[in-house]
Image (cartoon, rainbow, N blue to C red; front, side):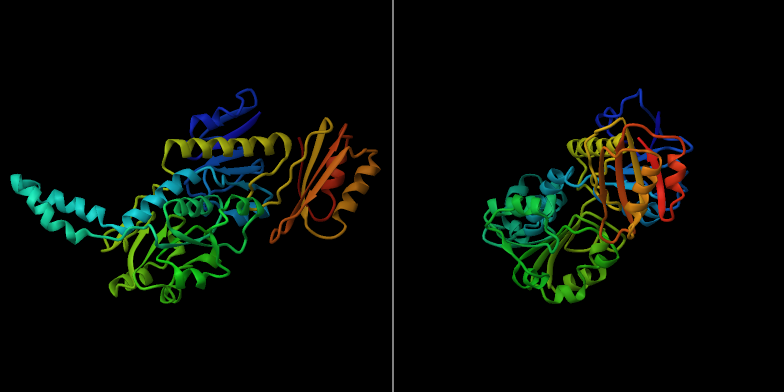
Length: 388
């Protein structure tokens, strides 16, 4: 029986993927095997020795102490693309509301609601204050062409926009998803210099904090409109406000309100609605449950943010799963220990990850002889070992 803690409300359709005969789901297991989480802050949490994985029902993982998890051999999963439709739709909405002062106009109409029969005449005379440009024929720059950025780029093309895309880490799958009409930007300066609208979809980390800053804004076109539905910290709020004050930035749409942006002129602050659709929450919960289940039951790792990806079909009754230092001779030492115990390797996969100090090895075998785990566990550099 695997004990799973849920730190937030996880959509039932996802929890239903975990067989009650194998999983006990609660919010207060003292030492769980796995955790499912959405936005709960985990940096101050202490993890028990049993904890094997954390599945984040969403894309961002900055609420999780990822580095500490890596040191302890705990796999952290996220659900890239599961909320892509919801965020794409909100991005298209952001394009429109950043162009035309729809909200300002609506608020103004409410302010004259007591004018009775004079309202239609007042509307005709006052509407010019809320005029804004059409997006057709304008140029959009998409920074980050993952599951969300690619969909936004393609959708903007369909709306008649010219689209530039920039992503130095563009995957083959993402490239296949992009329209051939999207202009490849070789660096962000190409985006800044050519685009009337810019939307950013990159992960937040130390190196991307204030990705949009004073220097970047200085390179942008006069009157640019900027959209940030990824992470609030990607944009320097002080720089944005300064740029709005001098009309360098016409409007900024953010999904991450704070004390500086909540009521600032020409900043549209949305209350973190990017993935807030029933469909998105269901998709994220299902994907998170599938990832967690496949790792706990089979040792397979898919969509981990901190550990190597590794998947292998079952070919024997027992599977040995090992996290170890990513250094020379580790595989030789492991297979030597197996040979000494008379184990025949039926199948095997070893995987590393750039920037991760650990590698991951899975070995299928017919049986687990006595003393095998102790023999392998005694090898210098072995971090974590289990049988599934």
